[in-house]
Length: 230
Image (cartoon, rainbow, N blue to C red; front, top):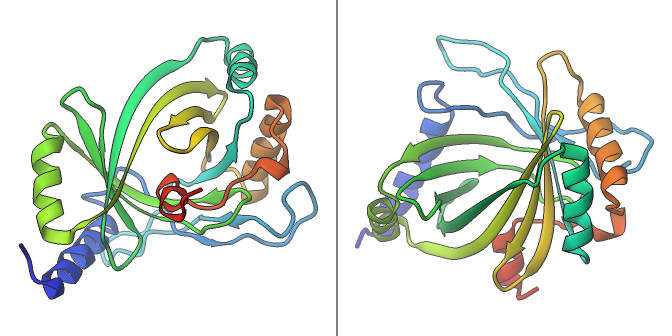
């Protein structure tokens, strides 16, 4: 087992690598959204940034994200299927979260000998928010889980069955989370020419079409909810 000081060192290295354009598949930085009137006034956070690597400067992608509790998953799935003109794709996911001094580090196992190591930072708010993240694929999730567990320690695990719908520029997730229940997530993939307000408007309009109210919005990740016993 690694000593505690090495855990912090390894975690900081993941953070440094996540900021490198050679390791990141896409990332964006969290920043406060400007005040605006509307459905989520005062509860928004955004994440548009320029990569400030010493040898590069470029606009990075950003996603507006929303999570909410779903009381009637059958009805929600029907609306999402109608809007996406598809029945969605079923994806099984087993996420292992590791102890980390900055941001969050998780290994996502798709239960088919493939997975992703994901580092991300995003604010814990119950309105639209944007995440800065980096992803590295793996073909051997169990071995990587063992190494990271020994190096950093495990914070917790999340198991879920996800149904993915694509509606315009938005990824719509209907999640059945073990120990928590049913949730939906929206990920609005921002285009370079779009403003933060544009992304928020897309999210708000889609939530209305899907019948999701602001009262059902959820703060934090599934891991946080499990740790809180919610």
